[in-house]
Length: 147
Image (cartoon, rainbow, N blue to C red; front, side):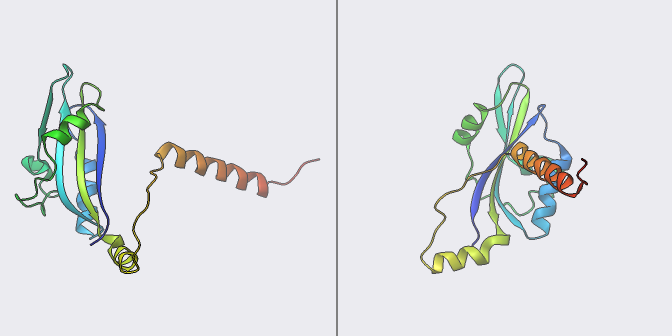
């Protein structure tokens, strides 16, 4: 089995964006991730919190196709925790996924007695800043020096 991770994807507005969920479905179809469980958490403009399974929405049934009714690993306590991080009038998609693409490496590490000792997610803004700095450095290196 590959590494399993719980991801929380937050969105403005009280409805998930179909293209974002469609992208998840494509990863699932390509065999890169296995969706173990999901939960949609909504915080109304008035601050009321509700949650539901991704499979309850017809427009997302393709993304949630492999989740069985026995999953239910994400529940009300998880929704309450995520709701604390949401702004009023927004929603989040909680995903419990197996990274299938990493299964072979994970099994080899476990067989060698190893384990993941830490994870540090890198925010997208930092990645963008690093790319911009790299592009600037390359441009400066290839530009002729003027005297």
